[in-house]
Length: 344
Image 1: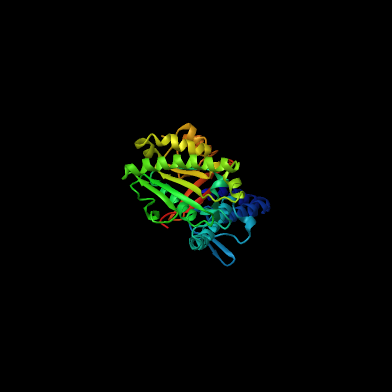
Image 2: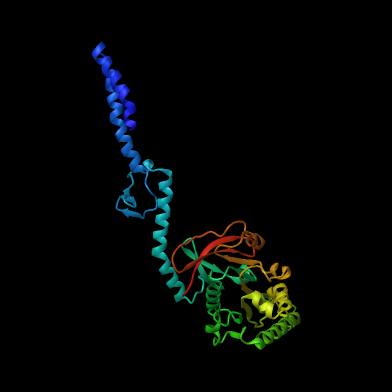
């Protein structure tokens, strides 16, 4: 129908030509009429859905069934972003299995001494050194986001560290998270909500550990565990890993005081606290202030994110099946978006 707008110009040009012999108006009108369907054809080929799969075929780039011009300066701005996102996704799909298999082959150890592998940051290995990046860690996320999977990943790496280390595991999800590690020689204690006495016994043991280590460091005049080692003394780091902190404290309120002491004094004594919880509910202020490293998994309440110290929402760096997105705020306040595998 828009072509009818050119009809008056064609009629007027024809009248001018027959009456005065001046056919220029007629020529311009016909030229405009010819350009109009060409512009319609170009517009239709540039306005298409960007939801199609990005493919690279030699020199050609396709979005769905539409081939883009070979000259990139002819591309629309929106095409650039779609093409780069498609290229990043294809690169990720090629490298992710290799990186995961490589990390699994290393026992989920990092490439640097003292680090464990916890996933990928922009398709690169992402590692964490708890004493340096923490020294204590809080993992927060709703049910089903993968908190327990991340804990298992961390424990798998810590158990393979070359440095002397011991783990105390408290699993208040029926033992489903930590039971696979029960027989490992580095696991010195495992408590579940199915064994009430175990949790109380571990609390007593941790209190005694604090006193024993404090006395050992004072004996040689060492201010922290690193200085203790420089005196030629041997003392393993102790990691206390808790799944479902809120449920643990609900059933055993007495443990709150013990955990607060570990969070406050554990760094210098070589005792590090790693806890997972669905939200900040049940986490006391005195405990939270010393859990300086925080990991938020998936979509979280903006208020919880703000209280955890994150400046923005959790980004979603990967949409690959079998992976979960998270954000780490380390003890120095630096934020990193990463993704970690589940079901490994």
